[in-house]
Length: 379
Image (cartoon, rainbow, N blue to C red; front, side, top):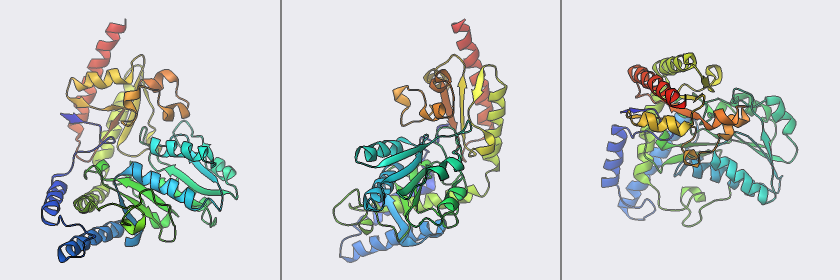
């Protein structure tokens, strides 16, 4: 099997699974319990929180465990909007955000907030001048995806942070689900106030994630109850998941120190696909993360390619796993100026550090054969 759908989810690392099983078996007490067994669980949870904070260069009290990216984005955006609505009702985001951001924005608009959607250029990157022009005294939040989940475009996070560095009442949220472990990021040096990532994107378990929140920021909680996670996310903590997440993050950040093989595979695929007739590559290497490639085959729908490759035991996806079954033209690609036909036919290859160049070569060979056979049928 060749698995090139890592932006949808990754295979859990064996060492991470071992950690999860060990903790789940030996530290199953509720961390909120008063007895000694509960206290040991709480101690282990706090240790994992501290480890994650140290790896990110932030404070322990700034780490909130979540169930993943969607929950983290909801808590960050709605939590901040409702907490600071007395300061203003204007939010800025982009046209190419994940549904867990885009749909939240639509809900906020229906509740009286005003949202500005920034355009992107043909490379999938926002215009900083448009961002600056959109800022008003009512702007309380900017929410921008760090790495796009469909084409891999990297946004200028450093420059965005600098733009609002002196605006005391404007906060900056980054959906970094696709960037963590692939694109280096120093949160403390980028004026980022809130940042979301999800464990299952870097070989941890599903149902685990983190929201970084600067300690001086207050959020209106999404889940009320026993007051766990400093009152921001009530519910019995997923101790084993949190410990395993810390392990997976350490391994991911170690891999991030050497992305040369990942980049070699990506560049090979970009070059070979671009050389094939009637192919359009939507990922621009100069502004893209090292693991995501998006392309279209003229005259063929994305799901046709996905299923044809599946028969060869090769797994890719249409542009987003979250919306792939809807068979709609990618809103991200349309925002980039791609035609409806190409946007509907787009597919995504997404890599992990476990992939090898030999797999990429087999993929190209099979893709060429599939396209040739499909073209014969069309003719």
